[in-house]
Length: 256
Image 1 (cartoon, one colour):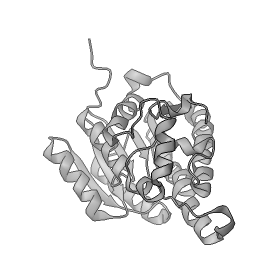
Image 2 (image 1 turned 180 degrees about the horizontal axis):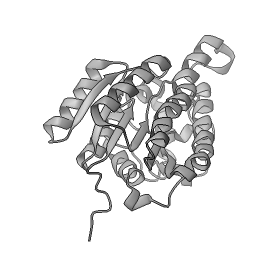
Image 3 (image 1 turned 120 degrees about the vertical axis):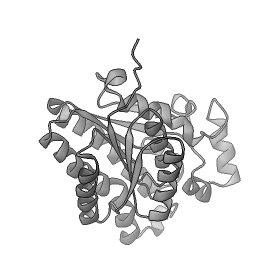
Image 4 (image 1 turned 135 degrees about the vertical axis):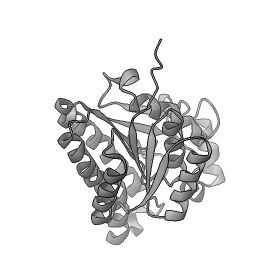
């Protein structure tokens, strides 16, 4: 029986692949045989992920770009095409957060978070999907959302609004790209020990989260790999698009 999760011969673009969660997912894709282009604003962190993939026997290359600067994304896309000829998988994993109370929020902070989490994701997808369509490459686009995209769970107003937009965009583009054989799905992570989570969660808030998480713990970054590999594989999830796949320790099943 063939391996449903084998990504050998595929090229994956990991936008925000230098982050904790994005980097872990990129490693998971590489472990299944995909060569991975790591795109990050911080080139040192991108290189760290690339070196870890190479040390494990995988193939990766780092590219510097910022999703809030679309010219840099367009340049990265051209450089990746020169490196690999094209791509089959796009992971959108950039993220910016803040716990500023609503009444203290200003337009600069709103725009900054939206530029990364929603506007950047939308137009990055436009750039990479356009080339996939031109090359008639069927494939997979995976967006990283959040449990905060539904009920306002953690006092992060702008972040929650941006991730709610990600869910809507995911389902809209699933319909838009279906005729091209490009599947678009999102992963909704629960609370993972990424740096931005720890900065905004008090001890009381952590206790509350654990009280509403049946598995009673934070997730580990590696626990997102299986969901991403599944969504990346045409063999495993070829009939799956427009899905918001929760990886949240049961948080979504609880009543707050």
